[in-house]
Amino acid sequence: MGHPVLREKAREIPRDFLVSDEFRQLILDMRDSMKHYGGIGIAAPQIGVSLQVAIIELGTMNRYGEEISLPFTVFINPKLELLTHEQQGFWEGCLSVPGLRGFVERPKKLRVTFLNEKGESQELLAEGFLATVIQHELDHLFGILYVDRVKDTRLLSYQEEYDAFLSGKEEELE
Image (tube, rainbow, N blue to C red; front, side, top):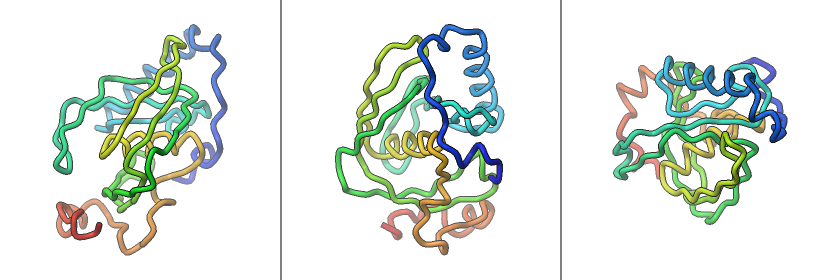
């Protein structure tokens, strides 16, 4: 947090760039960074590159009472369409804001259209925790951090205090 590239709208990626060695290296660098820091997603601006690309990889997990998974997916020049105004809230963390957690409410269901790493048009419907993960990562492409979306700053915590006092209390906040 504080790096100017995190606060600007990232540039769209031209299709011809997708076949370049530079693009392949960018995806490798992003995936290595995500794995190194134990993340489930990362966007190019988080490693200082102002391009509209994010990756998400969720092995099968049970989070907040729902089983979710998403194989390694590359989102290029994504467009979000909200399919409901119904909100859901989760405690979010971020590789760009280390050591903090914040309670963020976001729309519960969405459609995202994007190009994959081969330049093929894709569409994904997501709801629940997966919808939150996608919105969180794609926010990075538009200069938004999750802390910008915390409505009540009393629900912003250091990770250590979150673990000690707040973890598992999501239902009390909804």
